[in-house]
Image (cartoon, rainbow, N blue to C red; front, side, top):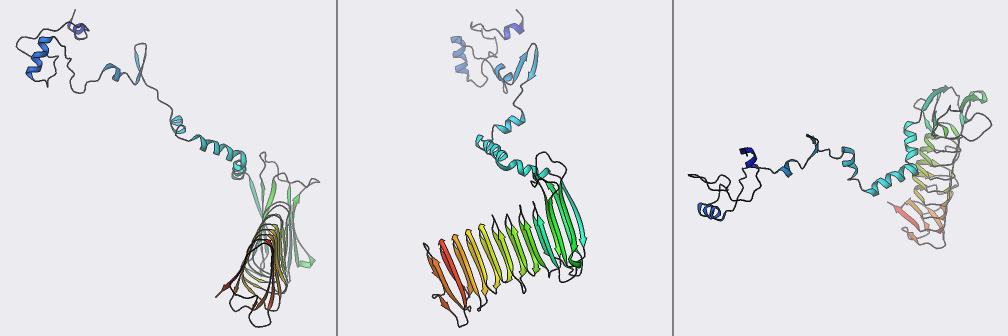
Length: 368
């Protein structure tokens, strides 16, 4: 048998020592006494040079196929990432897609078409808007002598978008003093089927506004004049003044938020809060909600009546320390905290303020 075969011999017979040199199969770091003892006992100590690896270690990451060595195929990068994602997160992602993520995705990919019209109007002017489905934004223009600019954006939120049948009709009547904007679906079927039109209307800052949004929210900015707004969703307004008229906001199912308000108002919502800040109320003004909180921060004219009513919710009023008013509070099952310390405040004449809540605390704050 040749040298190659004897090198892998598994025989347990002791190897004889070499004359004049140490057995090359003995560990090189063993002292001479231990080495001589092992040679007398016939113990075989294999020699493993530095960096030696056994066959099992060499082939532990390979597969044998015939006579070829094929590298071990590990898991794909995708599976390596997936195994570190907790099952709870995967479940939440699935629930998100089922509950509302699909609608978000639709909004990201839905097609939109925007058109712009310009209409001339004479003072005093009025604008009447009806939108069957969509958001409405009416704001004062930087050029009061310029045209009314109507920007309409058609959209479709259905999974299978079709030709948008929403029609936008904007024209001038009343000898140039009134603009009518009507948005509804063409044909006899009143259902919009996920189709709608968002309106952005720039008007002269002095104008009377009437808006009806059957399925959407309304926003009013920088307008002075009569305002009559009804929306199925929320109503937001900023920097508005009723002038010699009145501001009427009705939200069927949403909150009402107003900042920088002056004039006579009637704000009501069936289900939602009412929050008014930086305000000065005149005339007989009222704020009422069936279910929600009422927050008012501002001042009131001392010769008028004011009413704040909620069936289920708190009432929080903040009035200046120099205000004059008589306070009438009806709180059936609620606590009352009045920082003024009295229901009769300031010299006459005094405003009459009525507060009613069936379930909710009442706070009257004094602003210094």
